[in-house]
Image (cartoon, rainbow, N blue to C red; front, side, top):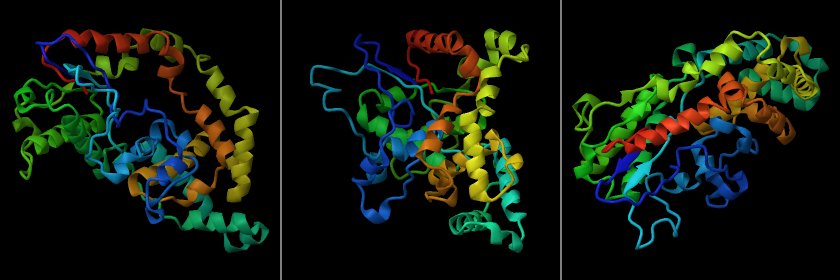
Length: 351
C-alpha cells in the first residue's frame, strides 16, 4: 500500500506487522511477555512459513493489538514520513478446500481403526492416536480459504496501528486519496474491506462502519495481473505447465529419504499403514497445528505429531508452489518492480 505527501520528497518504507517478511520470534521470547496462563504456544511455530499466526511474528499483538510499536530510531524529529508503501498479507484464513479434504482423509484413517487394533499400539502412540481421532475436524469445504472473523479483526487492527503510527499520512484529509489494490481472491478482497473498516473506526470512533461501497475512498481495486503475477508468468506457462518434468525436484523431495523417514515415523505414531500416507498428507497434518493455533487459539494434538527435526524437513517442502520454483528469478522481480513503479502514482495506497 502507498500513501504519499506531494509536498515532500523524503520517503520512509516500513514492513507492517501483518506481513510475514518479519523474522519469526521464538515461542520462548513471546511467552516471556505474557502471563503463564495466557501462553498457547507450539515449538513448531517458527517453521510454519506463511501459515505462522501473526501473534508469533509480533508478540505485541497479544498485549495490545491496536497499540502501534515503532523502532525508536525509525522516526526522528528531523525525519518526516511522506510516503508509506506496504505489501500486506491477508488476514487469518480457513484452510483451503483441498487441505480440508486431505485432513478429512487423515481423520478417516484414524477413526477407521477398531478397538482391537489398540492392543498393538505403544501407550504413547495409542493416547495420541485416540486424541486425534476424538479431536473435532472443525473445518468444512465451504470454508475454502475464506477469511475467518479473526482475520477481519487482524486487518482492522492493523489499520488502526498504522493510522496511529503515521497520523500525518493517515489524516482524514488524506482518506479520500487512498486506493487499495488487491487480488480477486475472496480472502484478499475481504482483507481490504476489513482494513477500510479499521480506518473508518479510526476516523469515526464509536460509529458502525457503513458498506464499503459507501465509504469515501471506495472499494479495493482488483488487479490480478499484478497481485497474482504467477498466473501471468510466461516462464511458468512455458517451463512448468507445458513441461512434465519441470517439478522433478519437488517430487524427488517428496519421495526422498528425508520426507519418507517422516512418513514412516508419523505412520508409526498414528498406527496407520505407511502406504496410506504421503508427503502431501504429512504437510496438511503439520499445517493443521498452525491453523488451530491461528484460528482457534488452541494447541491441538496435531502439534504433538511432529518434533523440531520433522518441522525443519517439512519447512523445506513449503516453497513448492510453481511460482516459487520457476518464477522466482523473473516474475517475482517484475512483481516488485511493478509495485515500485506504482509509487509514482499520486494519492494512492496499495494493499
